[in-house]
Length: 169
Image 1: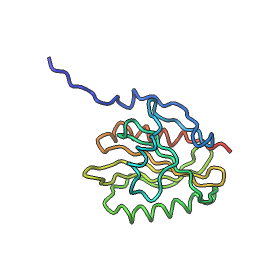
Image 2: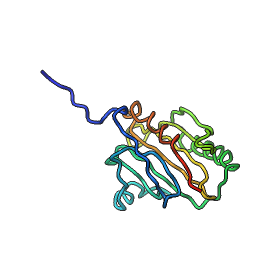
Image 3: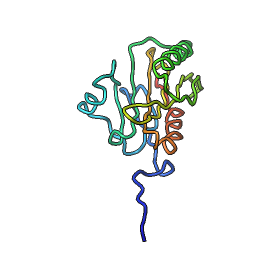
Image 4: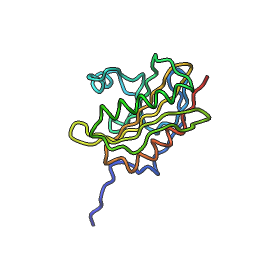
């Protein structure tokens, strides 16, 4: 009898664990088993990026969750402005993207902007959920990525991760 192998655990089996990132500034759920990307991996993955994230968690580069704690000033009133500017910029930059949603959600009594889309990248499609808010007066941008074939299992987890974001003041 032939058995089909399952390369990745379905989302229902993936456990999310609470982590503190960015020197305890942020608390967020991260998939169990995800490791912080090494400097070498960061150099390779973000070689052509205009800016690289502060920290990236990954499961062997197939799925990643990046945190960029920027120098940009931010507060709750500015989240809507950032959301509008990011939406314009991303729509312009990713003309071939399929958009699933964008806007502002209340996450832990804080305004959190988000953009959710699928874009072509190096011969395949990549699902991305970008979410951002202010943390201690600066802008925090979080980016969740996975291959399009993994979207069905990872999209609900990406949204749980976003919903778990907690800024420590």
